[in-house]
Amino acid sequence: MSPPGCRHGRQDNGVIRYCIKTPRPQMIELHSVGNIRPHRLFASLCAAMLILAAVLVLPHASQPAPRVPLLVPVFSSAQATLNAIIAYLVLLQFHMERNDPDALISIAFAYSSLLTLVLLVSLPGVLTSDDHFARLAPALGWLWVAKLAGHALLILLAMLLWRKWPARTAARGEIHCRVALVAFVPVLLVGCACALVNGLASNLPLLQDGQGSYASLARGWPGLFILACWACALLSVLLVTRLRRSFDCWLAFSCLAYLLYLTVNFSSALRFTAGWYLSRLFELTASATLLGALLFEVLRMQRQLKTLYQSAYQISIRDGLTGLYSRRYFDTALAHEQQLMAHTRRPLSLLMIDIDFFKRYNDTYGHPAGDDCLRQVAACLQDSARSSDIVARYGGEEFAVILPDTDANEARQAAERLRNAIMARGIPAASPAGRERLVVTVSIGLGCRRSDPQAAGETTLIDEADHALYDAKRQGRNRVACRIL
Image 1 (cartoon, rainbow, N blue to C red):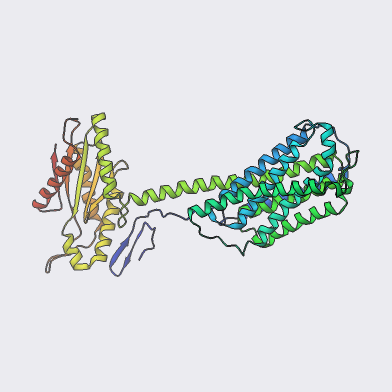
Image 2: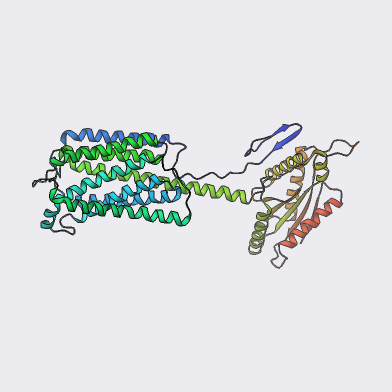
């Protein structure tokens, strides 16, 4: 038997197998996993370009550059915004897939965004005076360490628990509580980090001297700790996910960008240098590319949903056996054509088609062969009809064809064309004993409604076509009979 979804026929034990192709809905995947190679190649290319840029700038990282103090709040605002959007999109992903590691990734980016905002409002000239900023400077340096280290450690924790926390089914109320908890945790973590740094500020070493150099941070254990955190986060993403999804590719790229950001930043250990400016661009790149990948997945899901909707809609209006339009769609389409005809004053014709002696065919060859006969007749009707015609299975062995903007003469010609096409297909019919071998034929009743808007509704048109069909049967079958309203 022909595989599902085909549109061709072949001989099978004397019976022609024929089916009409109908679309099948596909399962929606939040992240593309099928054709992942383009994402891997593009992410690898971007990573190579980023590494090359870092290598080229490292020898000149300490070279002074023009001071543009306004860029500091601009960079910080952009970074906080990007990370906040990433956190929100990954939170939506967690809401859909119930995958707990996604919750930790969302918390990581939300935590980084909130601490970036704390550092932003602490800058002099934003909400803080110069004198107050000088008093806050020791604590702000350690908050910067807490931001970067915490961000990396949360990603690392998500990767370590990836296989231990499979996606789970949760009730609507439960998942809403979990989402609310995930949204609250970053606020709690930021509050704890601020309280801890503020409480230990007097005992913590200074990370920046009076000239603005942070060499003690870059070359001391805090800098090495941050670098180690991001290196471990990158390795964990590569080893755990194996880059199976597009999101995994760009999360790994984001970790690499943060690692290069720290490397170039620490190589200069001074603000407003070539290394410092480029490192801030690396930090923005880490978030911007990941956000772009997430938005691309949203667009892909939107296209997939549209395709799935169209496929499901086609299945809902199609007859499962023949692939023609269903009776419900036929009723809706005929009512629409009636209304359209009343406005355009153009004629409308309807063909009711019945397979001759179909009960005898079923009794002789069996119901599976009868189904094949219906498929072949349906395919013949569909192939022989005009593109503007609506061909539907009316029920059992009966079919209906709506002929918009077609008068009685044109409709009769169309009906004869359909009848002759079915005869020409040569489907073996059930012949009585002693009779020559026959082929399947059809009887067609034609109802035509003129452009008179005062004529009766679609029920009358169906009745007239049905009465004409019985006229064709009484006159000997395999013919076309016509009634005009």
